[in-house]
Structure formats: C-alpha cells, structure tokens
Length: 260
Image 1 (cartoon, rainbow, N blue to C red):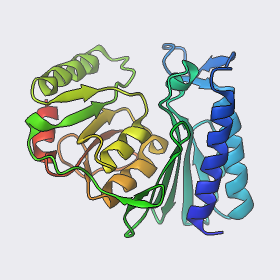
Image 2: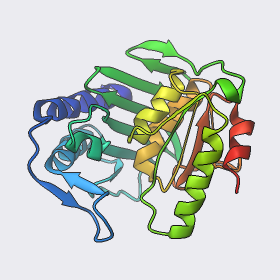
Image 3: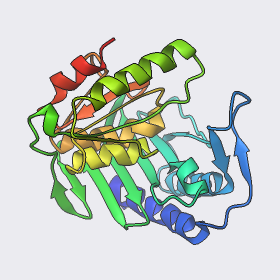
Image 4: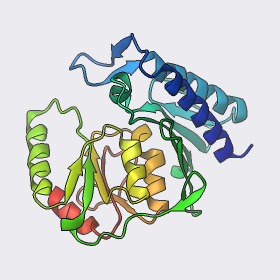
C-alpha cells in the first residue's frame, strides 16, 4: 500500500472508533493543572494506538509524532508521521459533531502528505505535495471571495493563561468581527483548515497550535490554492504555533487586521 492509502485506511478505522463511541464517554482526563480545557479521553488514546500500530506495521523505519505521546523516533529516518488521533476532543466529549482524525507525513522537514477524516459526514480530505487537494476523491479549491466585507471566517480560541495575550486576542476578534460578513469558532483547527480549502470558509486564524493540529490541514489548504502564514505575513512553520490561512485573495487584509 502507498503512503496515502495507509494513512486513509488508518484514519477511517480511527473514525469508526469515534462514531461507535460517540455519546458513550464516561472517563475524561485533563492534561495539565491550569484548567479544564485541554482534555483527553480513552478514545484519543485508543485511536492513537490504532493509527501508530498501522504506521509501524507498514513503515517500521519511520518516526512518529503523535499528540497523546505514542511517539516512535528513528533518528536515521527522513520520514516523520504527525498524528492527531482526535482533533476536537472537547467537541467529541460533549457529543458536538465537529471532530476528526488528522495524519500528515513529513519528509526532510517538509509536509508532503495530509489526510483528515471527518467521520460524521464521512468526509475524507487529502493532499499530496504538488498533486492538489481532494475531498472524497474530488478536486477542491479555495473560495474566490475578494472583499473582506463578504468574507465568512473562523477562528480558534487558545486556552490563554496569560491575561495580556488573552486581551489582545479579544481585541483582534472585535476588530475582525466589525469587518467580515460572519465569524465562527468551531473547535477543530484541522477541520477549519479543510473548510478553508474547500471554500466553506474564506479564512482561519489561531495561535497556540501544535504540529499535529496543523500539519495535514496546512498542506491541504496550500494544495487547494490557499495561503498560509503567521499573523504578520511571515513564513509559516507547523512548529511555530501561530497560523493565518486564507483563500489568498483576502490574506493581506486579514493579516493587517490581525496585527497588534
């Protein structure tokens, strides 16, 4: 099986676990002592175990970076799989149907493959470097919205423990809300990126992100014709924590609104 076939099969299997257990959760844990926002469930770990097992079975020499700690490092490998087994855990734990599986492959420090599976709607988003982006096998592209006043955008809300950063975030949110047609906050960065890629949203921004949140989705956006940078337009890195994704047409206007 090819890289993308293995990734898709693993994502579908993990998605089935999520659907089979939706609404049945009883045990929820918290990752840190600062608050009750960053949570983990047995479904996160079960899905991660399944995905990493399939990756190791097919590509035993590759490294793996996974959110819940199922990591396998191979210093001699140029390949690294980056896995978020359940993006949108808080949504999932509250039976809110907006969550997904995200799997990316990095080769020589560049993301070359991304797969994101949303099991509720059975939507498989995928991209390979230089080959475009797809939804359930059909080509997708970003929206053609040119005016910020016509744009429909989405943001993420990082769990700010720094009051100054929190205040800046809400000032930005207020400024953008006064300009755009509509704004949402859905709770899954990976899916928000996919929604930009297929034109459902015109832009998405969030900070405090990890590589597993954005690796697959950022490639899908770029392969769909979109643009990804930091808030100020600087070069984006999946390890940088801050992201502005757009259809490219409103990107400069968005990064001006995000500056502070």
